[in-house]
Length: 70
Image (tube, rainbow, N blue to C red; front, side, top):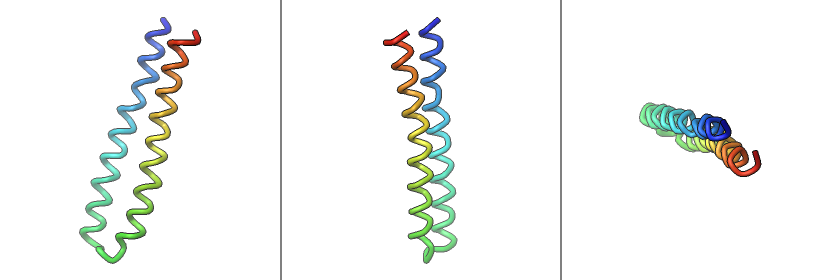
């Protein structure tokens, strides 16, 4: 039962990967349309990517805690 919970917690990596991929694609389109705004776009992309990756890391930590502490 604990392994099922750890597996479900590890699935957060899928959502983070999809989110970062979509954000990168949209940022590339935005820079292609307005090259002069690339600084702001890059800053926003990095902030959003960091938040999405933090979600994946939290899911990984929950999965590891399920395996080792429950």
